[in-house]
Length: 207
Image 1 (cartoon, helix red, strand yellow):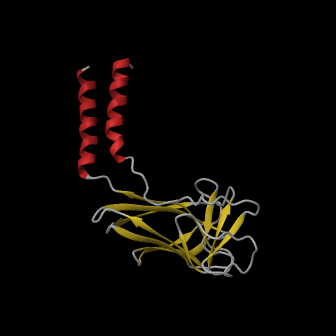
Image 2 (cartoon, helix red, strand yellow):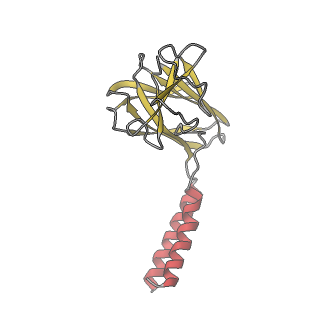
Image 3 (cartoon, helix red, strand yellow):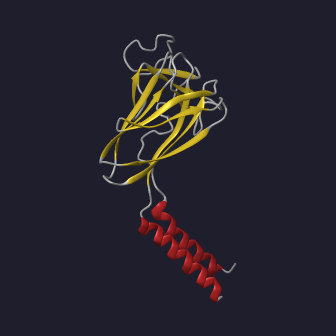
């Protein structure tokens, strides 16, 4: 490939790809903050005294509000899909919930994605996801060490509440990690990509 052709390809790809490289509006979607030390898990209570089965307790998770009873921040090769930490939605003990208020663009469509596994498992209907208090889906979680990604379409109103609710009690539930909410590319952006690719094809054809 000639240098001029390489430069042309690089420039077109940069122009076409930049508008669609969305940044998730979820804070701390992979639950890496705070970083836990010592034990492979730390319990996060929804209220004082909720983590009744352990002394390994941290007060909060950056960006998220814990509800119901508790969740556990967990770490290790089979406990996280992205990074080194994930969440066991059945804390010590559970069940627990996680909520985050997101700043969105009213009327804009978003793609909500997240990964699930299990502490043990597999578990049927172990996790429910809500958008503004309305259930989006209830999903099952595969056996520990296996991760499954889910995608859903949601619409912003300006300020929206994303919530995950664990459906199992005890100390073992669905594992959650790598939560993202990304805006859907606008038609104009997709048109720019198409035009760039057509131009590239015609350029190569003439040569």
